Length: 117
Length: 179
Image (tube, rainbow over all chains, first blue to last red; front, top):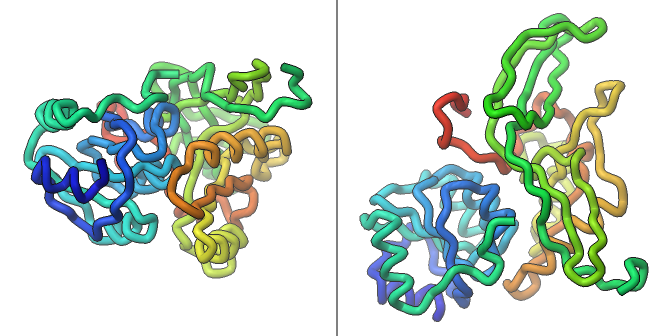
C-alpha cells in the first residue's frame, strides 16, 4: 500500500505535500530514539510529538509518512522541513490506539526491525 | 564468517538509556556535554581544574553499539552521545556548507555528537565507527537516490553557537527541561 491510498482509506488529513512512497510496516512511539533504533525505511510512524526532531529522525530512517494523532498540528517550518525531506505528514483526530487498530485492520504490521534492540 | 571479509549487516545492540547533559563554566563560558546513565540527570555544580561547571540543560537519549548479524563483530559507540542534523544557523559553518552542498544530491548530512576531548575540543569518532554508522543508516534506506552521510560534529564552527537539531527525546519526563 502507498501513502496516498492509505490517506483515503483511513481518512487522514495531509499537512504538507503528498510524497507517495510505499508503506512497509508501522511504528508507534513518541521517542525519536525508538525510531532510530527500531524504525525501518517505509514505515508509517504514529506519534503525538510535533517538534522538528520528528522530521529529522524520520529523514534519518527514511520513514514513508508521519501521522500526528489526537488532532495535533505541526508548525509551518517543521512542515517545510518535511517537504524538503519528502516525508508526508498527516493529522488525525483519532488517538494513537484507535488509529493503529485501523492500520492493523488494513494489514499493516509492526516493521520487520520493529523490536527493541 | 571472518570479520575482515564480511559485508556487515549492522543492527543496534547494547542500548543504554540516559541523558545528554550540557554544562557551562561560569568563569570562561566553556560549554561541555556528556552522557549520563543515571535515572535523573545530575544537576550539581562542581569544580574541575580551573572550571566551575553549572548545569544548563538535559534531554533523554540512548547510547548504543552496532553488531554485525553475519560475523558478530561489535563496533562500540560509547563515545557517541547523540546524532544531530544541521539547522543552517551560521553561513560560514563547515557543517552547514557540506550539508547544503550534499542536499542538492539528495544526501542528508548528520553530525555525530561525541564527548569533548580532554583539552575541551570536540570529540570525534574514529574511521571504523564512522563507517559502521554510515553503513547502518544507509543500508535501511528505500527512497531512490537518497543517501545519509554522518560526519563528526567537530565539523561545525562552534559548539556553543550551534543550533543543530539533536535527536533526543523530549516531553516525556517530568524533570526534563524545556528546549
